[in-house]
Length: 194
Image 1 (cartoon, helix red, strand yellow):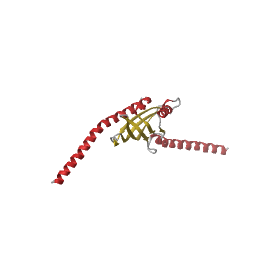
Image 2: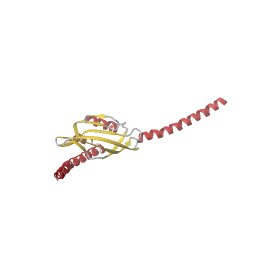
Image 3: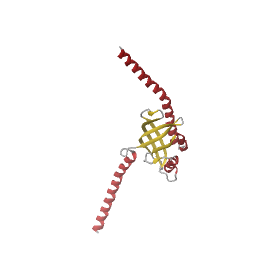
Image 4: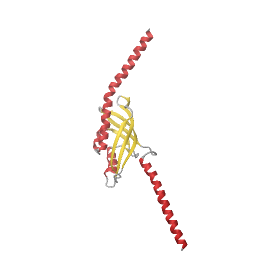
């Protein structure tokens, strides 16, 4: 009987702790959803200055092209290089990230999450290319607010639209090479018969 009572008291305390922990983190999860919304809005509207307040004092971002950025000036330069310069490769980028899990807290003021994103790139020529990316993020609480400490974005080097475009181009170039070779053989035969 005493063992049964200890078991029920232990279970009650364990479940109470879980419920309290979930209630405490509900506010954190809401703040983190708002943080992600701010990042998405800033990137999609190219209001890069709006990213500064959501970044930790010392942060690291690895962009989809594997550029590592550790300063706010680095972020501005990156977006200017790809979207702002006269000969920029891209006109626009629209991101749609989705977290696959709620943030996992490893302390009251730090956690990580990960997810996917459907990213639509508009090339300078106007063609739109959609790529699926994966991301991981580490967040910390600084001065009472959640900030982005680390973000890593990546795409498959094998299964992405740019690789598929390259693969389709190899058939085009192969066909062109075949035609050029056939024409050269044809004219070489004509010259030889003279």
